[in-house]
Amino acid sequence: MNTIGNILRLTTYGESHGAAVGGILDGCPAGIKISLDDIQSELDRRKPGQSHITTQRNESDTVEILSGVHDEMSTGTPISFIVRNKDHHSSDYNNLKNIFRPSHADYTYIAKYGIRDHRGGGRSSARETVARVAGGAIAKAILSHFKIDIAAYVSQVGDIHLNKDHSSLDLSNIESNIVRCPDNQVAEDMIEAIENAKKQQDSLGGVITGIIKGVPAGLGEPVFNKLHADLGAAMLGINAVKGFDYGSGFEGTSLPGSVHNDSFYSKDGEIQTRTNNSGGIQGGISNGMDINFRVAFKPIATLVKTQNTINRQKEEVTIQLKGRHDPCVLPRAVPIVEAMAALVIADHLLIQRTRQL
Image 1 (cartoon, rainbow, N blue to C red):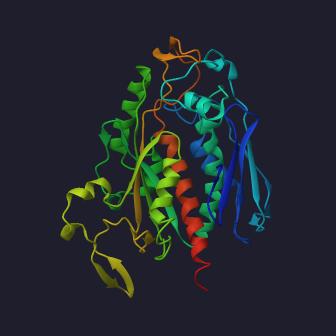
Image 2 (image 1 turned 90 degrees about the horizontal axis):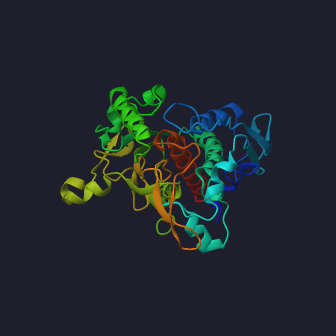
């Protein structure tokens, strides 16, 4: 239950306040260029303390590759990597040992296992996503070999929306601001909203949009393991995610079929569609158009302000959380969304290569 993928399989391990987090990526083909700097660059986009609107936990998130790579080339054997935890303030959580924090996994972990690691949420902490981002960076290297590119950006924070189609945006601007929104004017409004939430000891949710370019037609399975189903499962497995849609999504339900259908045509010998309400996927299989999707994140559940809850003795208590927390998870979640998309697409690409010589 800690593994994703069929041919390309990532298994993650570790807890928020344990010695380390890491993963084993099996199934990576031999001969793929694996740059430690590229993996570290992705981790730097996810790591805490990168701006004043993120948690100030001070982790370098330095990755070490233990196996499966030689002279920056994959050897075809399992790639093992580790990121050691350095700045964990476990004492910040001592008062929570027997208390269930609102909207956290404290109670459900007790219900499932009968025991839980109360230090930062243990395995349920988003700290675990370090391993997903590192594994996703390797998946990106596989996709780069096949000229497939993935980008994600923040398209909504609270009630502030970026109401522009991705095709009209300059996605090279995503990293030009700390909220990772490609429209700098909208980004300023988002940053201000996050700052205000932080001052009020509150949090904000929002939406991340993902774009996958260069995917060939034919990826995905016809019944189970449809491409959009696997993408959705990967995104819904990210901490704080509440929803996933692709193409026209829920908005498409208000359109008549005559408007919603994507008509085909041929351009320079390539089959394309004039519109892309399908989001690049039809019948669970990629059709060669850009795959676009959206991931909805709830406001982060950890708040500094006083809240009502109960303890393990079922007594009503109040809590005021300590520690260092994000007022909005969206900016740091962008590389996580990209990583999960890369793992799914790379896995389906390898599956498809077993279908045809």
